[in-house]
Image: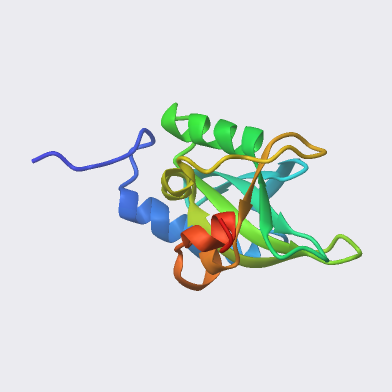
Length: 149
């Protein structure tokens, strides 16, 4: 019988449990290290993990996810550089302080983003994520494109 394990020899359910339990504390937990404006890496119970932030700033209704960072996150997961890849959904206040709002496995979000065009921004192309992504893990078509389309 073959056991389903990742490249680090850790069972998928262990990876998911370890990382997801640590994500709500990502901004204070010493196991996580910021490696870019919106990127974190860490090791949780032997699981190598990478995170890209989707942020919502004051005055905006949606969360912004940098496309380049997200593409590199997915490539790192697929290439075996990390055992787990997540997008952490966060709000930023006027002073720049971040608050954790939720998370999603990067590969799952990547499937949801297929066919969604990125927008151009000051830091490169980005995706907008609707608030409904937090409530039920689903982004409805009207949320992505607007009800008037």
